[in-house]
Amino acid sequence: METEKKKILVTGINGFAASHLARHLLSEGHEVHGTIRVRSDLHRIGDIRKNLILHTMELTDCLNVEKVIFDVKPDEIYHLAAQSAVRQSWDMPTENYRVNIDGTIFILEACRKLENKPRILNVSTCEVYGNTKDEIIDENTAGNPNTHYGISKYGQDMVGRLYYKAYDLPVITTRSFNVTGHGRAEVFVDSNFAKQVIEIELGLQEPVIKHGNLESVRDFTDIKDVVNGYVIALRQGTPGEVYV
Image 1: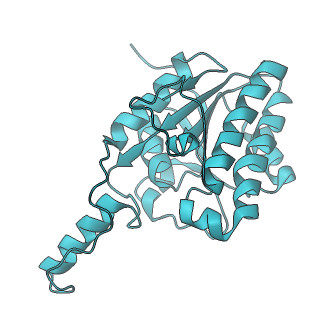
Image 2 (image 1 turned 120 degrees about the horizontal axis):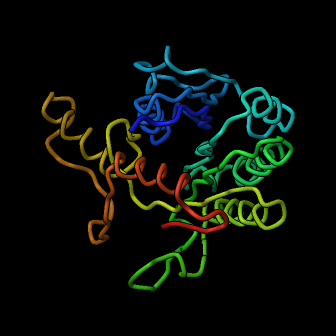
């Protein structure tokens, strides 16, 4: 069965997850728009750049955000652009909140003014749970963030649900956990270990893997599965709900 062609906007399209999502959406035959920043590194989308329609957008500039939304008039929005580094959120807390909370408000404010409201995926994170003692974390686990990043994303979650309740804007929120796959930044443990192995094999590093706490246990989800989850959540999920 042929998929109906949609006009789709992916914010932060040059990011790790967003670039994989863009490939998935292009493979379905959609018209894919993406937002980038003036200083964005586009290497992750180098192979598909000619198939994308790119827009320069700063999340902290409400007029810029509104113009892009009004120009594109998307059927779907996957909102992945964010300040996503936990460590950086401690160094630049104000910027962290401006990008993640204010930026989301600017997007939703523009969307509610459109005649045809797009379905919106509000991409969040497990960091909203903080150091929970629950053995199983699910949609009913209470948020208890303990970093600037986690608090900002929890605020983004609340904003998304507020716009659904107040304006009937179809916003669906997802919270993903540890994700792995091609193109993940080297600041993350799996990519960092892989980089060190290659450098050891090339003789660029002594044959010792540098690491942090090895007692921690984590589950990792492949980025392709996460992308599939994003698409299913946006198209089949219930607006106002959160999916873990």
